[in-house]
Image 1 (cartoon, rainbow, N blue to C red):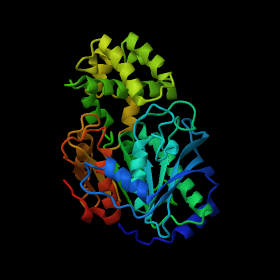
Image 2: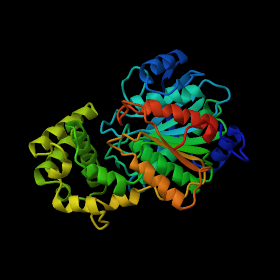
Image 3: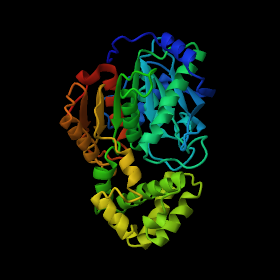
Image 4: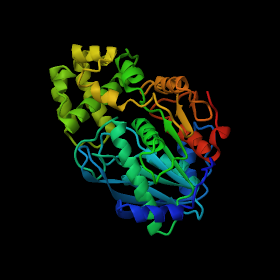
Length: 419
């Protein structure tokens, strides 16, 4: 495991937190468990493309937590999330896991159990990490789970606070249960959660929370370069209707989210009128799966001629702004504010992904590594790895990538491959 110089016991940290801060944890409800047998079955079924099987060393108790955080306008707000406590007397540390894209309010970590079907990526993280001896804390985010109102989609600078506060809540829950959280503090996350994890890691490394000393971070397949690599990928012509449909979902969800969260962006400045009005209709519904959102947007997109590209539903002004990186465009401004690739990490940072990712493209990772190297950040601090296993795509790569997160947390850079 990566060592923390000058670390103190988890109990002393908890006592220090309790003496200096108001309580963050509002409530905790036990929702089930993941046994070692459950973990072995899930690994056998879902980790087939992984390079190795992450050994489950303990069973895990699952808790839905409600905790206090900060809302869109700086107000105190109640969020929900998952805390998974391993049945291990000496846990290795606490991992904040930031979940990926979903427009379904209940498809979040706090609703996850072995059989619920909700947030399978959170289940994979519990199996790979918590069943390996790590406490896991996974926020649902603003506007998801128990939090009403809109979700600030891909706005990682905003969503990072939900991660900071659930770390506090997890520590408080562990203290209540007379449990330890271990010596390390780690961050990971996938897809949207990869971007949120990058921002969370950055804030902790830059000293935003004096009670939290980050040990290491491993964001996975995140949109770190929103205005560069990811913007370019959104405009590229595609070879499949499915990839176009997913892009319509991503870009539509982003614009709708910003418009709902802050009220300054008008959808008809981003999309042609019929698609702009249709977005409000689709995302205004409480659909049961993300696939339903994708299919409904794809149907409308096909009507408007988006067979190989999303460009047909974009206004000329926004299409030009996306291609040129126009900072003055209202829809581009939040993307620039949430870019998180050109900065100086000070703790081990391991960026994982798949070079063949056609949705959150691997150039996000390449550009981050290039920017960090240009700043003088060496391989002892930041490295990346692109997993080239045949058949992996953005929708099925999380389990194979989580095994390398587990190895990194256990052994540091010495135990993992690097590009």
